Image (tube, rainbow, N blue to C red; front, side, top):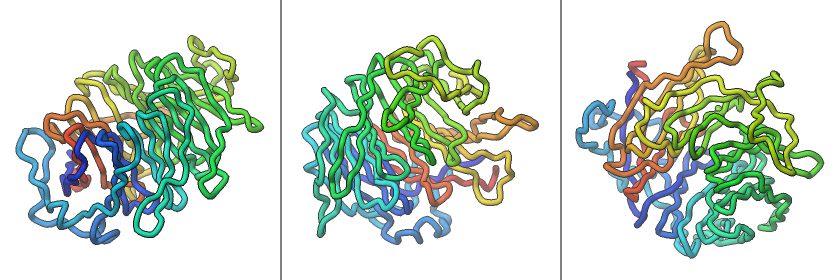
Length: 384
């Protein structure tokens, strides 16, 4: 069984930490919290931190017992807080994301209903734009791969798409109202300008653009309760979703017209032309409570073509899990998903709100939870 090593614990937030986001170099981490602030962190040794070999002090645990989790090296000796944005919002900062092409800008979304764009000027981050429009809590913000578009969603059941005109100027180009309940998360395809939203109405919607008009191209059903979020595989071929129903579903685009969901395919902006089918379900026996977050890491260098990488999940049962995804032999789209590592009480007795694999340095994982901390882990495949 593979193992997770707890490398560093980052302390400083004064309330639960909701989300973490790596920058495009994989060398900085942004976090946001119920304390109304955002923080930017980085290893003191920068990129060399991720390449350095960890020695005898490493605490390697498969989570089979509730042994104390001694951190390899304290955050004071390995990580530093580069910036604190403590005037970010009037209420909880629920979501944070680095601009993906250069990571010069950071976007934050808040329960105060606004989304703010921050750029570093001199020695501090300054707000260069405030995006308003959601009637109440904004739940998530996400940049498109090109950095030209920004998506937000909220408790008002809406998804907003914004276009960047440069120099902190943003225009709202679409407001999408097809969901019937809170929208929990928005996620861009890693290559194309295709957006997926995840909702309290138990569905996911796929959004596409046609001549500047955005529309619902597919509705994915199957989860039996709130869909909290999802993650694309790095190549964009697969999509994993997680839910209050304690299951993980893996989807892929299909050429089969019969694979379209039909029961929820309604709405003024619905124009079905994207077909997705569910090709794997991790049953509700693996997680004992709601799954709040999932992240998908690609396969390590030199892995066989059937190795599709690793899912990490954060859950309300306080456990951190890693699952290996493998392409089924002889099938074009079938996959198997196998639990390979479980770390109990990864944030003590607190919920794990977010998990994020590093996009550049394989095997490095950031997690954050209700215990107000951020933890940095390393995946050990030596026994895989």
